[in-house]
Structures are given as structure tokens and as C-alpha cells.
Picture: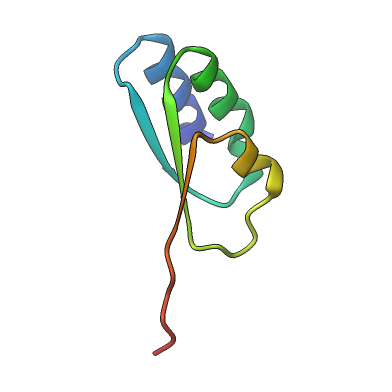
Length: 70
């Protein structure tokens, strides 16, 4: 919840032009939508596991990291 509030605060106060969110959790969608409505570009960084289609649709750019098995 705190991260979502931080995203909202940053976007409402025009503190940044871009936000990088490292998640696969769709609970961030409302905060991401608010940020984008306020002109903030949202980059979504994921490990490509369990990322909802809706989360990627509400992001400006998807960055996927591949993790090699040890």
C-alpha cells in the first residue's frame, strides 16, 4: 500500500517524469493509472512470472528480466 501511495504522491506533486515499478502485482493498477493520467510515464519491470495482462496494458513500457537457473 505504501508504494501505491508513493506513486500517487509523486505523480500528483509532479516530482518525476517517469516511474519504474518492479512488480507483477495487479494491486498497483489504480496507482499506475493515476500516475499516467497525471503525465507520468510508468515503466514496469518484471521477472515475467505471474504478470497480469491488465498490469502490462496500463504501463508505458514493459521491461522483462530473464533469470538463469543456478
